[in-house]
Figure 1 (cartoon, one colour):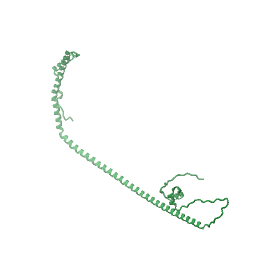
Figure 2: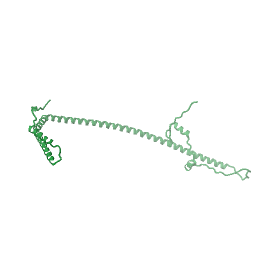
Figure 3: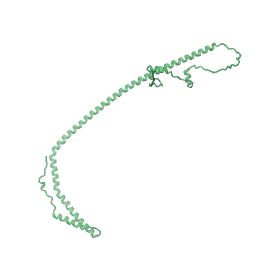
Figure 4: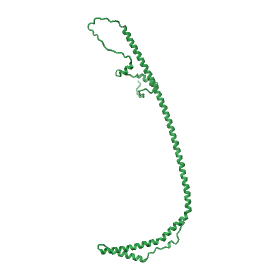
Length: 255
């Protein structure tokens, strides 16, 4: 569709005045006469030729502006006609564009809200799962603490029983020694047998083994009852204070 058209444009001619052509050619011929400028007269001749050329180009520029003025006015009239013609269509374009823009903005808001809700739900699920795992870990830690407390209590009771037994054994040994001492026959002074040597030597009895070990750790040897420990482990114990329980692989042969 060609909404706007210019009529009789092809009949317009661009004409150049023959006098202007002659003046231009004369100015160029005068310029050709200026070959070199080394003297005052040559400089004057060059300046005159330059003024002639400048006068021609200035006159043509002025004529161009004058000749183009109606064309420029015609262009403004064409722009005004096109603008008036499109005014009602442009108003509808603006109206529908505004509605489409508002629709797109609303759809993006809806999509963003849906995305936000999905992310919020995902965070809620992750938080709930983390809370569940944390609760499981807490229960496991609580059970482990209870197991360690039970093991420590059993070990404490066993150590106390061993201490009491050791004290009782030491007391019994002291009583037996005292009884043996009391039942020894009275030795009367007798002459030494020729060739024998009689001397006195130091000895000791531990009256309280635990207290002795605490006071003199360098004079006590602690031996782990390996068979008893392994029996506990085979019975299901997996934690012992100050010990590491692990499995190791051993290879043997049948004969």
